[in-house]
Image (tube, rainbow, N blue to C red; front, side, top):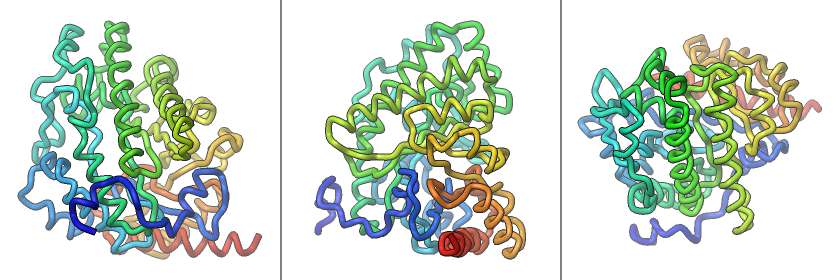
Length: 368
């Protein structure tokens, strides 16, 4: 197969490990599947070497680079899923905003949205194939190169999370500028959230057409909202995204599980479990048994070990994993961290986490 043929989304290799997809459907395999958010990242020396001296978003726009970075952790660890290397802020870029990755500061918008009139600067209609086709090509190339080893996950940021970045101009501890919009400009806020939702739906559908076998929606800033604001400015759009994407799946008779990860939204577990997502991702501040009780078997769950537990000795990591598995059970469960891997983490401890999930879950399933 030539390089040109590798970016055609057809004739993909047969999937060899479907434990992740089984768990997303609420089933039980011969072990609990495991992957990590930010598993392609700076904690790996090969990632740092590959990325050295290269602009972050230029890397995101290179299908070959994204494919290589997606595959790197699979060469080290027995992960049961891969997630395409990209960034949630490619969506605001596609809508016409300038986003730069500034060393020591992170993502920065030189001209953030300040007043409702600034919405006129955004593209009202986005041609996702034109603006985000590089992500689709990266997904297709990676599906071929992964050779059916594990499923490939596509993703997006959720509307509220993207909105907060677009108004704050970057990261923020309070998100007060974005929340000011919710209180002072609710109509304009809903207008922006709807614009983002429309782009995200097409973006996710494009990822599936390109070869993504599951989708995750990151509502990373959910915890900044209280229950009432989440109910008004986040949940309806999260639900709308999943509903519209699923409707299109029905037309093509595709089954693509969708995961929602609303960090720190403890108050919304029941609502999220009644949405159109098959899997609810959990951060580390939620007790596993409580999460199971509150989701009442309506969805599979994913998570939720404290990322900082990976700083512990390996035998402690194993004990923490066993306790987590006992809390969640082995059916309809995907092991993960409660947030992404941090740059200073030891790859060997990541390997110990993955190995412990497989070893303990196999034993638990065998003992049933």
